[in-house]
Image 1 (cartoon, rainbow, N blue to C red):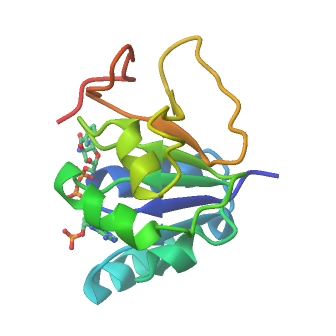
Image 2 (cartoon, rainbow, N blue to C red):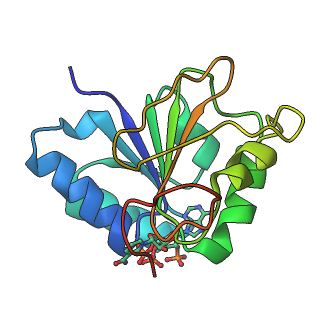
Image 3 (spheres, protein in one colour):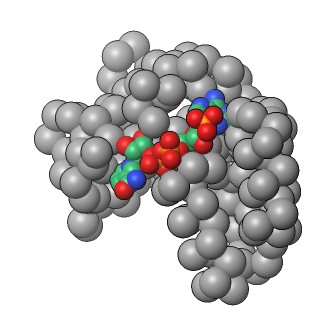
Length: 153
Ligand SMILES: NC(=O)c1ccc[n+]([C@@H]2O[C@H](COP(=O)([O-])OP(=O)(O)OC[C@H]3O[C@@H](n4cnc5c(N)ncnc54)[C@H](OP(=O)(O)O)[C@@H]3O)[C@@H](O)[C@H]2O)c1
């Protein structure tokens, strides 16, 4: 059984990811997206055959993996809306270039005294997550000591 994936922000990257998952065999009901405009929401459902919500909190509900695919300038707003909605068992993956993983932890109100709890997608790194969602960084990251997974934009 494939994990359920929620893709928050379904623009160029989000759509490419969703299409790739579907092409790789993910059932459409295992992929959910969140858009912020009704026209885009309806377009995504028509084009990809997946559910697309205008409510990011609804979209993450029941997802094992949450992918942030909004522009870096939109991350703060998204994180504030997500506050309290993420479950400890969920893995959050950020594609947003230049956004440190601490942004997600602090925005979610889960930074334990500034220690941070970031995990990232660099090679050979894999971490546990205690009582917090595991947070995986994406591209072009500024985080100290981290290797990003690629060049961001
Ligand atoms: N494109 C690339 O080649 C590339 C490569 C590496 C990394 N990235 C990273 O991937 C991320 C996405 O890039 P992109 O090129 O896919 O951007 P994009 O095409 O602008 O897509 C972002 C989407 O997020 C939506 N959005 C913004 N805030 C939202 C919210 N609160 N709730 C729901 N949807 C929201 C936008 O809606 P609207 O349509 O209303 O604006 C847009 O559809 C960026 O952070 C970028 O740094 C991109």
